[in-house]
Image (tube, rainbow, N blue to C red; front, top):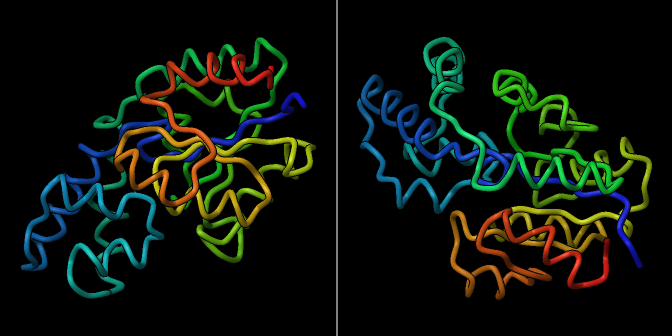
Length: 213
């Protein structure tokens, strides 16, 4: 069976956000006197919802973290973000093949960065955690994305980089493809990823090889 749509995670799947996130976390840590974070520790929690993200990395949970982020970090972070390897070409090729493409993320308002990076024209829908009741690993953002793309979950694939993404896809009734951006192949296989690719340059060839395009 061919697929009709592909939904992508945002952080470390469509967009390499690791540099910006690390700078933001450590700026907040310095301001509030919390321990600084390493890139390795950051990658362990990529994909967490905002509340758990701050709690794990900063050691507790305060409204002031989010307020400081909005005021002092968010206006500048997009400049430190870049499309992930092969992302732009992958999405453009999928659209040229008649496949609908969207973003479904635990990030709040991912469309803001997508617009800054001039990628909005490549997206048929963008859904963030602020648009649904529950963040991943609940399936809400994926199901809302499929609804906006006009397809059944079984007709869509979800692409992410964490076990949280794999679990959300399973709960949404979608197959998941994982990219090796923040977790090992062993971890992603153990989580139940349907297929794994090194990066998005291998995604369309994978789908063609599986007879899905």
